[in-house]
Length: 556
Image (tube, rainbow, N blue to C red; front, side):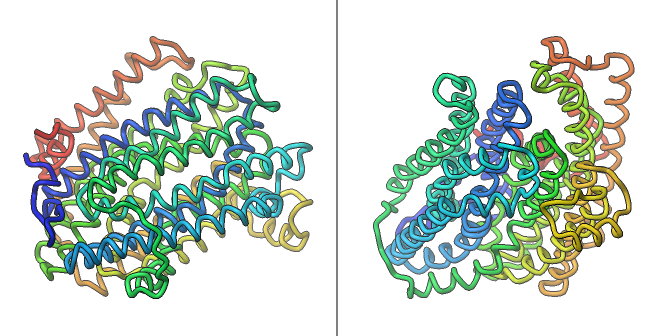
């Protein structure tokens, strides 16, 4: 198979990635492969952190890192990349030189915005921690440590904003590898820092803030040679009045909410979990990271690869091709999201016991139970998030960011109400008494952090339902009734997977402790389950079986 960079050309001999579902699958393999490496290292990073620091210490780091990371998602890859791809694609079709000017103007503006946000975050670190984690004020020293870590982490947004611009341009040009590999550097830096903890800083957790700053610099530096190879050497061009910049601002403003729904809902969870005592923030984080593994490796890879293709099909007014590609991309994503949901639900306790609990002093039975409970309810949101990602791309390919933004508002409202109803009574203190009294009247169940995870999944479902209904009204039916019948084998294969995993649990249960034997058994369960799922799809003659094999097969 030819590579995406050799599949065609833009004007001025710019590369053009393969059209249609084969192009999406090929690009998704690149993104998915790089993301798989990042996620495996990310898992190693999380295990290292869980066994190197107490959950009270990691609580402070996860909040400190979450705040600039949230801004990055809002200003950077969550909205800037997805907004920039269709705009940059349009200018590429006009002229390579004009597209180069658009890139430089966007790069310069991104640097200015990222610098302003980073400086502001440094000086307002204290109020930001009070805003995002008010419960830390109830525990002596936790608030102050989080503020210090936040000041170390905040410049990360400057570098990652530039990475987001580079990612949009390179993806439009058919290059996906360098942006997808960038997160590997963050994981390597954090692993090295955790292993060196205690040798430089007191308290040791501060070394993670320095590692985040270094990782941002390295991730940005990685993009520059690749940009130059594609004729896009970054140059300072201050042109805020350029038509492309004005269009980017108009498209990106509502996309700040629309493309970052999941992150904003996590923010609500972190805010409320800060009242749940030591470990609550960490338990939600570790469970969320397990959910991000299939999302990042499979779903987001397909989403990242499909947006440029959707955009080109819309620009060329090939709506029949768009429907075929949309249906194939959604089916391929669901064929991966469904078994991931089943596997995470059934293997949630063995995953945390065998992967994380090597040091019972820092990650004991309470941590295993807390993480597993959160993972159970987070996993229920995998399929809705998958559907939302593909439908957001459909809207973005039409340069429509208002619909995802409205869906985000609905989702946030649902998440806030569900979280307040399911977490249990909030304590008196940091929050206004009137609010606490109102929340206690609203409580339906005292589920703690598990209720926050369930609320996130309920919000994801609301977001997906809104996007599906609105997209059908705006762009017509992208899916026929035959498509839904085509996905019935996915449900049947998922039942087979669940039965196989249950049976394995009866005859060869994974031990509830970290050991080499436990890891081997867990890997066996995953491998046998995946094989059974793919075999069931093949026997049921599911069209998505071929798509999955195409995605997973090594590119020739």
